[in-house]
Amino acid sequence: MGIFITFEGPDGSGKSTQIQLLTEYLKANGYAVVTTREPGGTPIGDQIRAVLHDVENTAMVAEAEILLYSASRAQHVGQLIRPALEQGTVVLSDRYADSTMAYQGYGRGLDLMALRRITEFATGGLMPDLTIYLDCLVQEGLDRKQKALAQGKGEWNRLDQEAVEFHRRVRQGYMALAAADPPRWLILDGQCSIDKIQKEIRQVVKDALAAMG
Image (cartoon, rainbow, N blue to C red; front, side, top):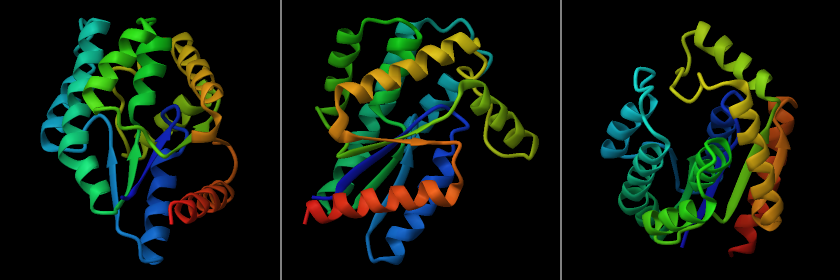
């Protein structure tokens, strides 16, 4: 069985950069690695992502939003993540179910127990072995994202244009999730240097791989 590692954090926290560096490191050390993202990760999931992230879809209600994210996740787990893990692959995902709890639960204010039931159904109970959370101040993350966009990188999606207070609730939600399950979470300061963050990630991942034999 492989190992399932997810990356969480506000947009602009540096997840994509760290995932790329970790992927290169693991491959150089002989590991089979699948790198993916949510929403998306499969052709069907990417079609759902386009609907979810379209800035024109301002009429989307929170209940539709969570069900679309969960539909994408169900396809992701069934088509890509579980098969890869069964082949002994290291799976690195840019976002997973914790994003739903943080964004739709704490951000939107949807019932957390209902979200857990929906997520359990969509994933078949699949949980990450390790979740790496890159923390950064809300405005810092948004500013970074806008700077990247000016350089032709990334996307500005429907959730990005929410009020700053929404993003603050999301960040608080992540902290609550990590506090409730400390062994699974590694919290890092996303405002540290890229190299420093990557060094800490590599050490924790090496330990996790060694523990799994």
